[in-house]
Amino acid sequence: MSVTRTIADFAAGFAANEIPAEVTARALALVTDLTGSVLRAAHEADSTPAVLAMLGRLGMDSEGPCTVFGLNRHYGAAAAALLNGTLGHSLDFDDTHADSSLHPSAPVVPAALAAAETTGASGAEFLAAVVVGFEVCCRLGMALDPTAHYARGFHPTATAGTFGAAAAAGRLLGLDGDAMASAFGVAASQASGSLQFLVNGAWNKRYQVGEAAMKGLMAATLADSGFVGAEDAIDGKHGFLGGYSDGAEPSRVVADLGSVWETMRIGVKPYPACRYTHAAVDGILALRAELGPAPADVQKITVGLHRNGITLVGAPLEEKRRARSVVEGQFSMPFAAAVALLRGRFGWDDYDLLGKPEVEALADRVDVVRDETLEGLRHPFGATLTLRTGDVDHRLRIADPSGEPDSFPDHEAMATKFRTLAGPVLNHGADALLARLGEVPQAPSLRGWFG
Image (cartoon, rainbow, N blue to C red; front, top):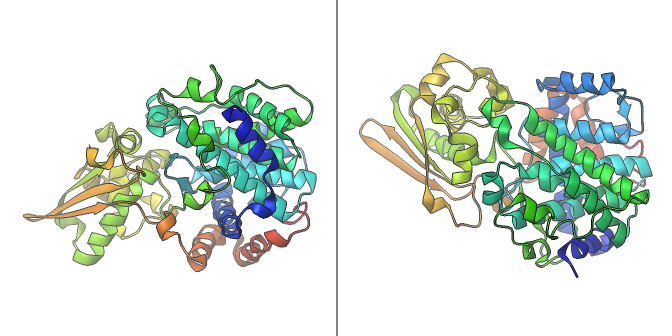
C-alpha cells in the first residue's frame, strides 16, 4: 500500500477513542494557545486590515456559521479558515514542531474549526480531527527533510500544513480512505509557500499559512463533493515529497503511525518570534539574571545556530541588525538578543523597540554564526551563546528552547500567556473565553459554541 493511501486511511478511519487522553488534552492546550494569538492579531497585526479589505472587495465576507476570534461577526467556512489561519500566524507566537520545523496549529486548527462549525460536529470530534491534522502535517514535514525543504526556498508550515488542514477537515466531513486520498491529491496541487518574504519583511508568511488552512478545507470539500484528485499524491513520482525536497524519506510519514504521537512533540513559544531565536534568548535572559550586566557593559554577543536558523534569522547579518518592521524583527536574531538584554523579556509589546537607537546599538554587537555542532541532532532549535563583558567570556549551550515537550508549560502558564494576549482585546471576557475553550471536549456541537 502506498504511503499516501496509508496516511489517508489513518486520517479517515483511526478511532477517536483510541487516541490517548493525554494526546487529546495536548491538542486542546494548543487550540487554546492559538486562539490567544488570533485574538490579538485581529486587532494589532499590521496586515489584518488589508486581508479584511480583500475579502470585502471580492465578496468573500458574507455572513456564515463560522467563528473568527477577535472579530464581532461570523463568516463562511472558507473565509473563516483563511482569517483564523492568517491571524494565528501573524504574531509568530504560535506553536512549533521541532522535527518538522513547522507550526502545526495555524493551518490545522482553523480548517478543523470551520469544518466542525459547518457540520455541527461535537467538541470531541473536533479535537480528534485536530490530532489527525497534526499527525499528518508533522509527519510530512519530517519526511520532507526540513533542511532540504528550506534550501529549496519552501515554507513547510504552508506546504505540509495544507495536507494537515485537508486531513482535519476531511475527517469532520466524513471522508473515507478513498475520498481522503483524493483530498490529498487536490492538496498536492495547492501546497505552496515561499521564503521570499524574508527579503523585505513581507506579509506573505502569515497569509500563506492562512491559505493553507483554507485550501485544505477546500480540498476536503471537493473530495466530499465527488471530485477526483491525483493518486499517490504524497509519494508518487511527481508527488509532494519528490517535488518539494531533494532528501525526502517517505517512510517517516507512516513510521509508528497510531502508536507514536507527534502531537506530544509540539512545543509552544514563550517569545513572539521565529523559534530559531528562542534558545539564544533563553540564554541571554539567564545570563542577565545571573550576572546582572548593564547593556552598556556587554561588548559582544556571539550566537551559534543551526544552518536553518542562519537562513531565517541570521543572514544577511547587517540587514538583520536593522529590523524596522514586525516581520523583520520576528526574523532577526540581533533584534531578539538586543530586546532580551535591554528589557529582560521579549513579548509582543516589545516590538515598540523597532528602530530605536539603543536597540540598534546593541544589535551591532551581536554576531550570528553557523555552529555545526548543532547539526545532525534530533532538534534544530538549539543555540550556543558567548556574552563578553570586560575581558570575560560567558558561554552557554542551550540544547532546546523553553516550551519544548520536555519543558511544556503547565496549565497556569498557558492560561497566563492566553490572558496576556487576549486580555487587551476582551478585557474581563478573556477568562470567560478561556473557560469556554476548556469545555470544548464536552460540547455536543461546536456550532454556536463560541457565541
